[in-house]
Image (cartoon, rainbow, N blue to C red):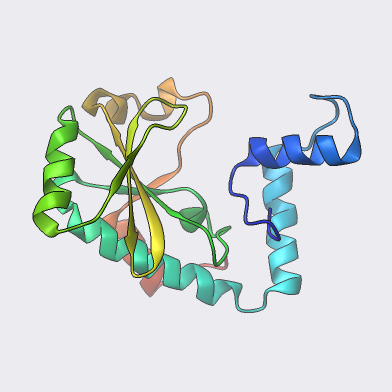
Length: 172
């Protein structure tokens, strides 16, 4: 994951299984074990990792401020501190009007593309200060359901929480 810039745990596991010639689904580490190993790897081989995460969080904050009316959340590796220099920034907004987010992009002059990930949620992809931002647009009701409806709780942070991370950073 660190060397090939893979952010998807499932994809990384599938690649490892294939390379090692193992049967699928057998004796795979959990995501928490992979996260721990990735943190250890980064501490050993990437001494400036905290600086990389801080820069990505600053870019995330800048992108979040563009969409404050939608109350964006930061999610994923930039929030968790596992992001590498090539990681994308993942944001989530909750609205029942997907087009209003696109209109906001157009009004700001943001050159974006629409992606349709496997989740089925519309995702707008654009660049902020040289980093790819993926803005997932989800129905309003999903915000209230939160972790209760998810198989794995989605760790997320509002704009003010990201600002706090930058002023009082914990060890990544």
